[in-house]
Length: 429
Image (cartoon, rainbow, N blue to C red; front, side, top):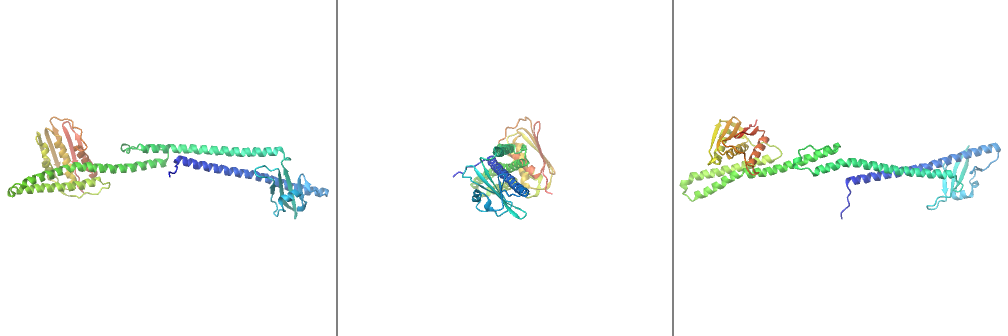
């Protein structure tokens, strides 16, 4: 069974409306009660005054008159009118408290009301009563009572409507920025996560928008790292996989030849397969490290930087086959404490990029200490074709990501006839 649900705005409005109605009804009932209490207080005061005037008149004339201006003042309960005694049944025990009895039946208004109070004067108890009849009541009294009720209910109704409208206006004012926050959240995209959220008027809503943006940015960054890891992995592992596959084919061909003649070539083939497998292992470690949110230090070891560059150039020289391109190396011996696999990835990508995008001309690779410069110069320079996500453009992205995470100064600038790349590999302090 599906439960009916209300929106937050409707729920709050309903709650406030209920509260307003309850408060207004409560105060209206309280006012109604106080109105009749006031009437009772006036009646009590009139009955006390009737007793005083009756006693004063008795003192002046010496005659005891139980009826004084429609008020019956007696010292004995049996002297009170029979109708009143039948209405109350017994005399009141408390002094100074007004008692009321009416002939009201169901929803019909009362026609006769009996008022009774017990008072004391100089140690003597007196019973004062009054019989109120609708036919004898003053028209002004009924008119005033009716007008008072109309005013009371009119003010209560107006107050209820005013408070409900005030609550509605307040909720509308509050709900507008909340709706804007909801709409802004629905239209969030990875491109908009870096844009400062708009002002939603209230500090709480602004803080919530910032929290939503930070949470989505964190999720988006994690997703981006996973996607980059897959792309980087597929790109970087292609070369060692190709090396392994080619050397396996070569090894199979060597198996059909005499072992004595191919022993040295067999060992070279196995050595190349071993190096390629180690490269795959190191690549995986580096890419996993790069994909993590927390930055842990990669394993560092002594690295002959000039030898590593020379080896990389030799391994990638096949990219210059059938190209009128010359390679100029200017290397100086240097041993640094570096994350070797990360250095191999960065330098391999930069050298591969220079070789792939040089059709005729020269490639100059300079290394002095920790500073490396790689530049290519084409005699007929042409704009590079659009790089596919799985092409070498991904290698440059990986290079930039590694340099940024390792805090290595890196710059890649386009020149008139090629590109000029400058890199500084900083060793661990």
